[in-house]
Image (cartoon, rainbow, N blue to C red; front, side):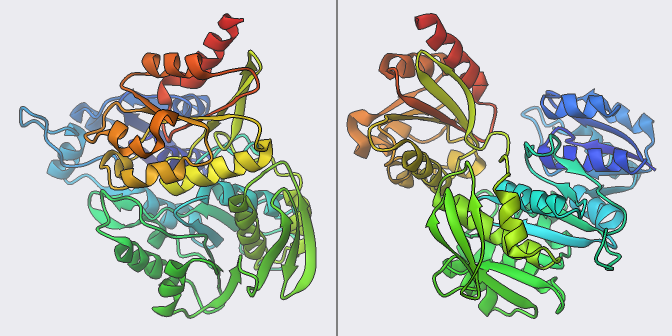
Length: 467
């Protein structure tokens, strides 16, 4: 079939496009400000990209329009539609669906789906699980909201049948997002995936633009639990009270808990080199280049999920010892003037804190950490969690906040940090502040869920010029 994807440059929709193309469909798509890296990946696959959402794209006459959740019925100041193509689709009665629904109907059916849900660590844990299954010879399909360094792409179909163990269902690992599906389907994306193995990695309040409170998100997570068959497995973080509440609403599948000392799957040792225990028996050791308790927990979740499709914990732990992580997850972008510059996707206060805590554990107490961040997510732009920022930045020696696009006073929110925090309304001013403070031996970590105005390369260039 020919599908035309609205909002194709988003990570998820770009992944759907890549899978559709690999499956033999004709794929075209549009977006505003068609942007890399996804635009480069898609063009390399021979996918035609159109700038904007003009109604003239109706002339393409695809079999199906696949609508990303960037698209809405919003109007501009002059009253004209922000997405004319969507209005034309509705007016003419052309067929349309959401990305998650198209994926469920055309890719996931007939597969053993392993879905990784959680407020934090979805991309990393999905990548870990995919790598474990790949190392075990299962040739998994996957769709990840990032680019795992072990694969170099964010999505692939995988083997059409499962090699080896007699189960004909091929395996497919998917990052299961709780964000809503589309403007016409306000259910969480993950409700469409119908996993046989569901990972509930953690759960706290986020997405303040669509959820009123934590209870509303817990309800969506329980909708996911309801879709897991009795022969399935729910892998749940045993430390999280919110997930305990979710499971108490009802669960009809095997539950494997991880993380706490009394749980089925637990760890002993430093997060960079630890023993894995299953049912209190030693089950493998992970010795890798990652740091932080959050990554140790991600590893336990991935190991417990892989076990459900026949991969022994010892084999999974061995695979994780060779795991290369994901682009933009504490990715070293370069070193200049004796200063390391890292890029990280952290944007929620808890993610910022765990990133910085892990880095502190890695570099020790003597090395200065300079945290450069922008509150760019919809939740952070609303200011819902601004009071948590000083707490999230405790492990940093200095913090620099990019304030463009905020309706709240970041300087006031960071006031408890005193002289340790600075703010700037534009990237150049922010870079000037960092350059003035940075000294040889420091570590700079730039945190954003967007491109951050190319700040990483600009910082490295300016630091190099300083020598």
